[in-house]
Each structure stands twice: as structure tokens, then as C-alpha cells.
Image (cartoon, rainbow, N blue to C red; front, top):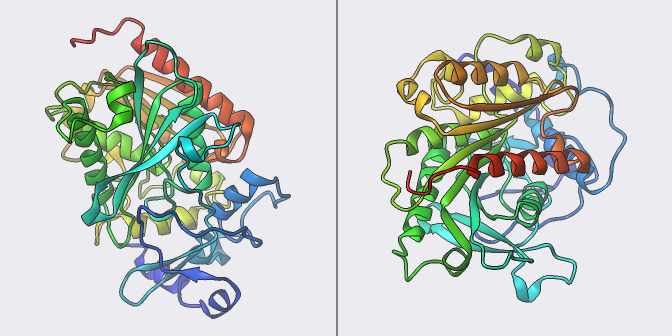
Amino acid sequence: MGDNGKDKSEGKNLKNLLTSSPYINYTPTITPLISYTATQPDSFFVYLLQNKLSPLKQPDSAPPPSSMDAYKYIGLVPNPDGSLTRRSSHLSVAATDEPAASDSAVAFSKDVPLNPANNTFLRLFRPRLLPPNTKLPVILYFHGGGFVVASVSTLPFHETCNSMAAKLPALVLSLEYRLAPEHRLPAAYEDAAEAIMWVRSQAAAEIDGGEPWLREYADFSKCFLMGGSAGANMVFHAGVRALDADLGAMKIQGLVLNQPYFGGVERTESELRLADDRILPLPATDLLWALALPDGADRDHEYSNPLAGGSYQEKIGRLQKCLVIGYGGDPLVDRQRRVVEMMEARGVHVVAKFKDGGHHGIECYDPSHAEAMDNDVKDFIDSTLHNFDPKH
């Protein structure tokens, strides 16, 4: 693709990086990563993680795009075989089931295998305090990370699901999906589709009578797909793919796209204005797309740019009700607005919540925005289910 030469040159000068920072070769497994506290916030993702724990004073912007080593900024080292070595400083936490939970825990969690051959699994969250005589909505959640980094065990994503399970309340199923470039798109979409069909099988109790938490607490007629950033991109594509699937007793009632990660070859005004954004600078987004898209594809591929055409265009108008959340300080906000306009033009019922200021992924490190997101999602679910027909 057009940016590959640039991306490769950005990854050549790695000697200082390799000698100054600890690295591990990371393969997603059902065992969370070994974690430690990072001391050098030299990537946008590490920045988010550190601010989640203790706010740090940061410069207002990233290094100028012309001088940025995007691999280093994201915390990646390219290997000769095309794989990546990812920084081990992505803070991670283990699932905490009821016997191991503290007295202050608001929710419990556990990991359930999905496809052992692909090292995929689901982290299930349920509220500690269950409403009496009530089955709970099911949220299938896809985490962010540009399709290249992060995990269900990454601290902000774990805490997001933990909080939602307690506050909504709901059963939240967070998908550990395959990462690029080892598994380029559409691998993540295929894992999302497999997770949807796993929920379908649970609704039919096809697997050993069903997973106990879902069997006891899930209302499969009230399912939602939700994701942030790249995970919101997955919600869009998984939602389209599921339209023609036989989901049996499972009913997807709505889609939640939190700051969806879309791209395109032509730069938008917000991308140019925020090219040196401290969270998601332009060289970082370009590199992530170069690593995630199929070989030879550019950012106008249908996986990246829903406005550029594609095999699913005629299906978009059939999508369920959507909540789209965005921020004016996110370089991706113009693309998010355009996708909302496109969906609305095709007849999709979209609840758009675009807010001034903010940053991409702000709910990961700002508790007030995390609470606002929880409230937006709760309002959306409540309004969607208010008059729904369970037989529809």
C-alpha cells in the first residue's frame, strides 16, 4: 500500500528502543499478560494506561509528525518475519470470579474459551448485586487498540466492562480477538462473528446445557454489540455480517459505536487540524491501518472506509438502532460524523452524541467521561428496550 515504504523506514532505527525498554513477544492467550508499572509514557497507549492509574502532566501534543517514529510511539518493534514485538508495559489484570473477589468488588468476571485453535476467548462480567427475578441484557464488547495492540485484560478495557456490568446492569462479554499484522483483517471480524454465534448457541443451550452465568442471568432477546475505537469498527462490520445470520433466540437490539475507528486516503479537516494529537497522531493511525488492512490495500478499503463502497453497502440500511459517541478533540471525529450521516441517509435510526472537546479514548483515563459513557449507554439500552417486541 502507499504508506508501506514510510512505515518500514520508521521501524529501522530500533537499537536504542530495544536496549532501553523491556519487550516480550506477545500472543493472545487465556492467561493475562504479566504486568508492571510503566515509567516511560512513550506511546499513546501507555499514556492512557498511566493516566488511568495516576494523572501525569503531559505535553499538549505528540512529537511533530515529520519527526515521529510511529512504531516507537505505539510501542512496537517489527520483526523480520512480519510479526510484531509489543511492549510488555500494557498493564493487565486477571479475571476475578466470586471466590477471589474483594468485598468492594462491584462485578465478577471469568474467562471462557471461544476457539482454542485461534487463542480466542470471552471474558464474562456479571454484576455483584443482581436485580431480583430479572434477566439481564447481554452486551458483546470489542476492545480498542487499532486492531494491533491491547487485550480484554488491558486495564482500562477490563474496568470499562466491569463498570458497565454493575451500573447498567448487564452481562458483558468482552472478546479476546486475534491481532494484526499476524492476523490481518478480516480476522477480527471473523472472531466477532464467531462470538455472536457462540452467544446464539448459548441461547439454544447447545453446549453442555449452556454457560452457567448466561443460563441463569441472560435475556438473549436483549443483546447489544458495543465497542470502542477499533472495537466500534468491529461492531459496524459484525453487525452488518449478522444481518443475514440465523441467530435463533438471540436478538441483537442495538449497536453502540464509541468513537469508531474509520479511515480513508483523503485527509479530513479534523485529521489535518489534529495531526499531532497527543493521543492519536496521524502517523500512528496511518501505521495501524497499514498493519491491519489486507496486504496491498489502502485506507479506502471497505474495512476502513464505509463511504468508499464495498460488498456490504446494500445491507447498511437494515442495521439496528445505533448509538454513536464522538468528541470534537478526536482526529477521527469528521469521519465519524460522515458515517453517521451515511447511515441516517439509508434509514438507520442513529442516536448521535458528539461532544465538544475531549480526546480519543478519553473514557479510559477520565472518570467523569467514563461515567458519562456509562450513562449514555444505559439511556440508549433503556430507550431501545422500552417498547421492543421480544418476538420481533
